[in-house]
Amino acid sequence: MTSVPSLAATVNQRVADALSAALPEAGAADPLLRRSDRADFQANGMLALAKKLKGNPRELASQVVGQLAAGDVIKEIEVSGPGFLNITVSDEAIVRTLAARAADDRLGVPYADNPGTTVIDYAQPNVAKEMHVGHLRSAVIGAAMVEILEFTGEKVVRRHHIGDWGTQFGMLIQYLIEHPHELDHKSDDASAETSGEEAMSNLNRLYKASRALFDSDEEFKDRARRRVVDLQAGDEETLALWQRFVDESKVYFYSVFNKLDMEIRDADVVGESGYNAMLEETCRLLEESGVAVRSDGALCVFFDDVKGPDGNPTPLIVKKSNGGYGYAATDLSAIRDRVQNLGATTLLYVVDARQSLHFKMVFETARRAGWLGDDVEPVQLAFGTVLGKDGKPFKTREGETVRLVDLLDEAVDRATAVVREKGENIGLTEQEITENGFQVGIGAVKYADLSTSASRDYKFDLDQMVSLNGDTSVYIQYAYARVRSIFRRAGDAAPKAHPELELAPAERALGLHLDQFGEVVAEAAAGYEPHKLAAYLYQLASLYTTFYDQCPVLKAEGGNEQVENRLFLCELTARTLHRGMALLGIRTPERL
Ligand code: ARG
Image (tube, rainbow, N blue to C red):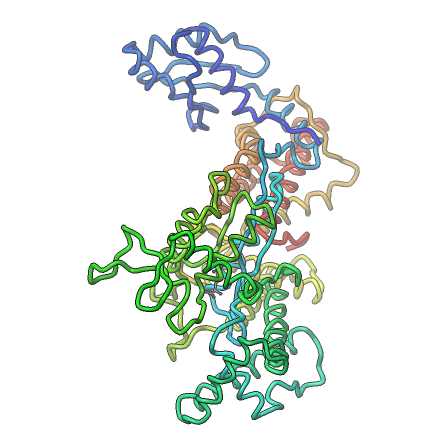
């Protein structure tokens, strides 16, 4: 495990040193180095600095150049435009740096300087309800963040805050008591998929039937309400039935997560009910400290800047006037648990942007109550709405929410058709077609979600998602499979770095991009922005495609060494693609 500084970091440091030697009064100024089309890198920092010190930027830039002897890393440096520095690094430096990356399991990616503990709240569907595309987003983005953060050395604790409590359980349980076989499974097929589907269809039917009765039959309504009281009082029979709903729902959730190729561990499922024992104390502490006050019988927290449309303040209600605790009391209790018992330094919530006001108020309340000190940062990774092709919220033609399972099945079907078409040429077996179709289809759904910035709404368009051209996961998966196919044909030739060789432009571009993996991962982790990693991987696949078109690998004109060096670039590309996609939760089939 050796972390390898990127060439960008090395060059930036050298220019910074030259800058402070040329201009000691500048202190530690950042040269602001970027990748550039004109040279390998461009540094713009001289402009702002000259402005600040009232000097001439071009002159300052020349002084910096004077301090920088060309050497093993920097091959060429020149002043351009109003005072930029254009910097070209040597081919040798590129290959040496990449060789150091290749020698490391982690591709030379460093751990974060001060890792902490992030408790991440994601993949939180609701008991007895169908999962929808919003739950998909939370699960996909959350799972990617878990991988990315762990890769940077952060300790990550997962929490699936499922909706498993509330007054609707009175109605459901009462109905089940009166219709005892409604949750029984009739199929003998015990596969996860069938049991999951059957569990959901039972729950769905029961939900609808009990709701209809609740709305039409006053006596049932009374019995259902009394059942809520029993549930809250901890009556054993009632609790046991409630548990059945939770267990059935979990059978369904797990079947969907399984379909999503995602591991959800039972121990990490701590739903709303998991905080029941803390609710009373949470409210008492808020009231005693004066953070919450009684208003119309409810316990409320007020904010100067949160007002309703009528201009009156909208409070966060922690306890209703009827004595019931709501969503907020649970979230506040969860914060206490996560900070005090789990040692969180970051609380990350992957939740729909439409809940932003709720979290803003919850975070502020927790700060006032002293449960969130300066050493803990709460963050909502808020995601936008999934839209249909028509740009409207994603619904079926009948206006119902689209069942997640149907959507995933369709993605897999489409992907399988794409895989089959190409796969027949390369002799894929039926089993490989099925497996790859699954990996491509699920990958497509995840990638579409991860490749736009989370806060934006995005269109769910299966045609686009499984397209071989454009910014899709299957494009990246093909690039990976292409590399693997070269290795199957390579015979005795093996990858080996040859820093003495001159590189073609496509090799340099590929190499410099490979070198930036660690920086991109760090950025994606620090800003909770998996889309930056997705964009990096797409670009890597494109650069590889150009390299592949322009630079023959096994038939390289430059002889054995060049074959080895190109294989070396191929191998590092494959490893970087594989690792990067794994961080996004997407598989890379060997043959496509
Ligand atoms: N179950 C909620 C929903 O379906 C999401 C829960 C978000 N997490 C939380 N701690 N409130 O909208």
